[in-house]
Image 1 (cartoon, rainbow, N blue to C red):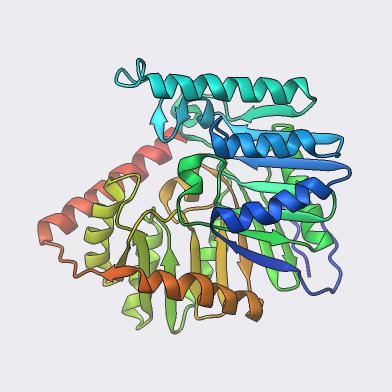
Image 2: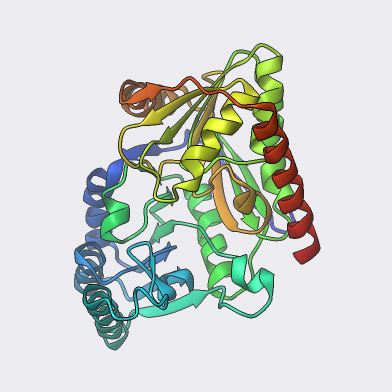
Length: 374
């Protein structure tokens, strides 16, 4: 039975979902490049970052060579001011020759695509209000004809492609229809909150204003966990830690795998303090992992563009999948979770009473500020 959210309705057929798990950029790009080359009608790409380095240019070249007539790129405005994880207009970067060169190459690449008929738009323009500054369209979504769709965490930039990450390729017609509609809504500037319950997979679209419609489902799954929860994410914050803490107190084994070399250093220290307070088994992944997934009781795999953090929970537009297909879950365990546990070191965390009070105070302050601003 398919749920209807905010007037959007889809009619699924009783077919087994075709879902492929693609681990890391090379595996993802190899599959996507084939789909782009075979596209006949349309190639729609939504990304958070699209940069004029070797990765971005490889995508641009593939698009220029593709026979499809309707080719579009939709990127968040974040990529107009941040390149290679660096703010272009900070005083220390204004005169950086390498960064300026990459900015120039990015503009030339986009200009060549537009000249060849590829439509390019940017979502979420920056503004003076706190919401305009913080609200980002964080989705990674690709739709090829009516034949294939991709969702996950990988962007088109060299530094992002070098990180450990994951995408899903979905081949079911009803899921593709749902995701085409989601892309079109974002393209038209009409973010939607929607949910599709299909055979073996549930798709959740968060619009940045009513994210409880999507994240309520994830909280429900955490609260219903009986045996185990394994979280892989570079950025885990409240309110997810609160629910994970409650799970540990029920006797559920909770493990968090987060990168030791986090591109946002704050989160590595935050993870130590919060994991100590919550009684979570913290594992530090050797290297940078941008992968976002949660496996609950070996029965529910939650993955997509969303981090398990406050910004995704409250203000970002995101796409999330809840997968119950045993073969996909087994593939995730074998090719992602178990290797990542083997590549992570266990950490003994201690949180002083002062540290715990500071963390609790900080959490409440941020929550109150975000409530007031949004």
